[in-house]
Image (tube, rainbow, N blue to C red; front, side):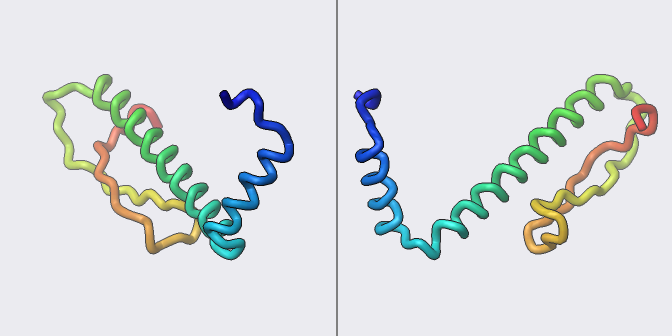
Length: 92
């Protein structure tokens, strides 16, 4: 079904997308998509590190969580938020 898309069909689809969304909104949409991808990547990395740290840390030695801030992009303060993570000094 989709294997028969040639150059004219792809160009037509792109023209329709530009007409629907407007040429001014497309760069903003792409920027927003990239920002979302960076947030998702940093959250997945934080969850993976949190899972590794909790598996290696003993349960009897309970410490208050350290506060860390994850930012979507360097200098982007509006979408940053604090993240509570346990402090593990053995891995650093």
